[in-house]
Amino acid sequence: MAQITITRLNDGPRNAIFHVALQGDGTGDLVDAVLIDPATSFDVPLPPEPALRINRLIYDLTGFDAKLEFDYLGSDTPIWTMTGDGGTDLDFSAFGGLTDRSLELDGSGKLLLTTSGLAAGGLGTLIVMAKKS
Image (cartoon, helix red, strand yellow):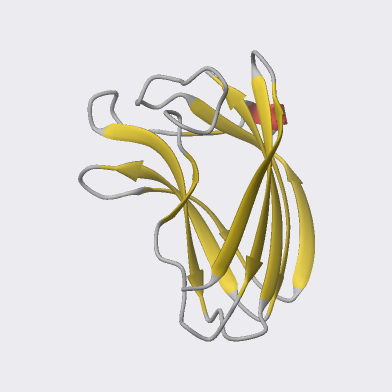
């Protein structure tokens, strides 16, 4: 599986920032890799329910595509698709951010990443700025 390194840059009372570094190692794509888990990603755990909003997403992917989803027991809730070979800075805060639309008892609150075409030598970086609901 590809190498993924997740670093929490900030964990305040209302907001958190995560840096995600990806590197393809020739073993294939990531499928539903957990980027943020309310139970383990914060100093004070959040309840395992829809509790996050993505307010800003900065990314650069080289040679592959990716998608973000919130974990949902029935099927995941799509959030955003990211195309490779270009960097992008997206600010969703003007309309309240991208929220987890899972039902309270059906969603785990986890933010997931799946890649497509991540081969050996592929590189990617994401900065995810989340608001805790």
